[in-house]
Structure formats: C-alpha cells, structure tokens
Image (cartoon, rainbow, N blue to C red; front, side, top):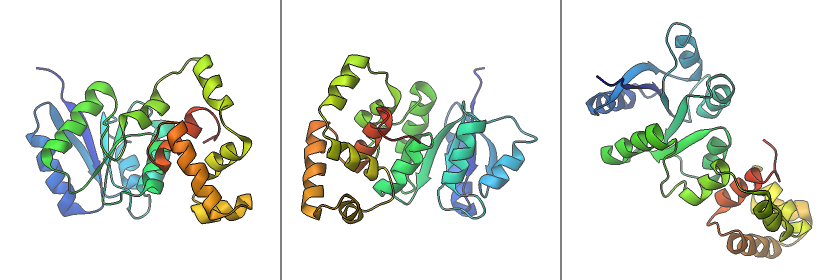
Length: 219
C-alpha cells in the first residue's frame, strides 16, 4: 500500500479544524498526523512526531500566528509544504505568506473539491495555483529565468519604477508611497498601471513577486 501523505492542521478554531480533519481523512491517500491550536503548539508536537508533508495553516491565531509559523517552517522544515486556509484575501496578506514559503492559498469557504485539488497539486507538483495566486505569479518565484531575460526585464525599468516596486513590497499604501517618493498619487497610479502592463502581471501581488524574483527586494 502506498504511503499516505501526512497532514498537520494548525488552526485555533476547533470545530472548523475537526471538520477539516474529517474531510482530509475522507480523501484517498491522505492522513491527519497532528492538530494544533497555533504555531507554538505545532512546534511543540514536532518534538515527539515526524514532520508532516503538508501543513494546513491558518493566519490569525493566538501566541504564534500563521506568518510567524511560516517563517519558522521556512528555516526549520524546508521540505514541508504550506497550504494557507484563511478568511483573508487581501494582497498584503497573500504577499506576506508567499514571501514566507506558502505553496498555495485558499479561502475557508472553498468547496471540498477545491480543497482536494489544492492538496493534490501541492503533493504532486509543489504548488496550487488559483484566482488568488495565479500560475504566472508563482512562476516568478519558482521558475529559473536565464540571465538574458533578467537583464532585459530590469533594463526596461526606470529608477522611479524600481523605487516604486521596492516600496510596493512594504506595508505602505499607495498614498504613503506617493508621499515617500514626493510625487502625486496620480503619478503613483501611472507607475502601477504602466508596470502591470510592462511586466504582464495583474495586481500588486504580481509586482511584488517580480521584485522578489529579480532581486529588487530582499527578504
């Protein structure tokens, strides 16, 4: 019999977590290895348990939240993949989780079929791409690009565009970026719209991942 993919659920909502555990157990090829209320409890359980293959990770949790847990996992469990399950769908949150190693991001109201597809894709190909995290965005992070392509893309950017990209990687709003760069909000909108077209991405998330991919912003 083939070895089952071991899943850990890290979420402080016990009823929801129990429901997710039941769903995971109903999927062929998957088993629930452990459950934890937060990142701290998850790490404590690892002292007496093998590492899971995939962690289903919430973001808002007490003591040690999802972002803090992802940071710890990136350093200490690099082979364990993260699938984020959250009610939050803002660019800032998605960007943060991608920067810290998440391999997929779905909302908690997703249908079981979507949940199963996410697990299968992460198990088989390493990533799950959906409307929140498009294939194109993840390619910026995961695929190697040759030096010629990198040089060509970077050479097309102006100094102000590079500064805008770097500031977009922070928590600053577009209005705050305009104040920082000492330009009008309309100018910032122009930078954004031009870069979305030039770099063939669709949102601030895509701009940020481009900046990370090509070394314009260091994690």
